[in-house]
Length: 154
Image (tube, rainbow, N blue to C red; front, side):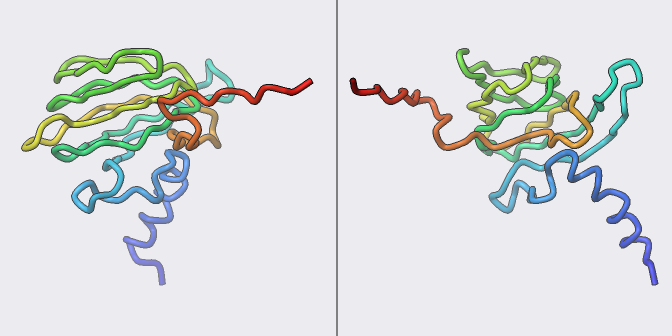
């Protein structure tokens, strides 16, 4: 027998998988930031792309792991402050009402709520291919320290 909860989980699971959040846990559990999917829409004028909208909540003092997004990201701070640093740029603190853009596959090195007492909330729009996750972890070699290529001996 299908219960309303099982039906809701089955309906939301593909969307959660598309957002790459099936393993996210609540921020107060010490895990990843809390991500609440709000919308997924195919874009008829951009074949092969979907627009995704989600609310991201960072608990006081919480940081997200370094990551990248396969598609374009537009972030808008709804509440609190968020420190963000993209590779090749200085860290910047965004306050409520401010926004930023992340080009596809740009390394997002810092995402942090600097407050020790208030959560930070972001409204995030993403443009991705239908089967792409919204977020991918950076490989270990993609840290702030560049990996130098091996020099071939002659």
